[in-house]
Length: 282
Ligand SMILES: [Zn+2]
Picture (cartoon, rainbow, N blue to C red):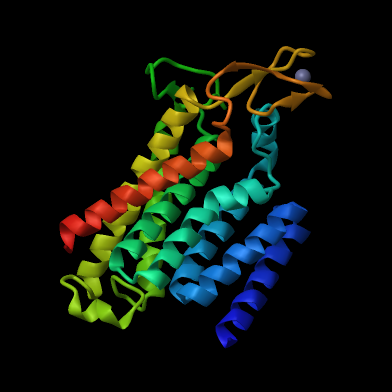
């Protein structure tokens, strides 16, 4: 009962601050409060803290050099203010992993959680830092140069940022678990469960899960994500409304919006990390 109270209080403070700083919309605030409370109460400080590392670093990064990025962002669905859809796309799968672990305890849930959070963190870092790259992005599909801000466009800086974002999640998971592989005391009985070996495994899980997850995000964004054209100004868009008019779908699957792409790619990142864990630890 106390865990629910502490979780709710901490989530209220963090989500409330983000709402006040206009990083979350009203619905985003409500969703973040629920996600945070659930992770703390049903998981532990390690699960909650890992989410917090993603949430705080990505919020700060999106505020950073905001003006340079605003021009590119204006045509796309993502804005500085996250709504409930974005919060659930980023944190919902993590909550499912945590709840899975409550009902059927197994280390693979934690490994999958690290991969999921690594992917959403890698993705945000790639967008926010890679967006400042001075070299023109290349399409992940064709390898050709594409305009900055195009879905599926990758730069070397963006890829490095994405790997770094994933590695930070692995390192955070390790530090928040008291320097071990798992948040539970059971870590001691697992091969490589403690110390440097544990850090190495978690860095690999976070780095590789995050990088592959965010590459999947770029690929899905370029190939399957729905795109629209505004009938008034003629711009290509990720959102279905522009210039006060309904935009026309030009490509992609109707249900495959940015949130769906995020969710699917983090599922893949989670699967990569879980498979790595099974391979390395058993
Ligand atoms: Zn328009």
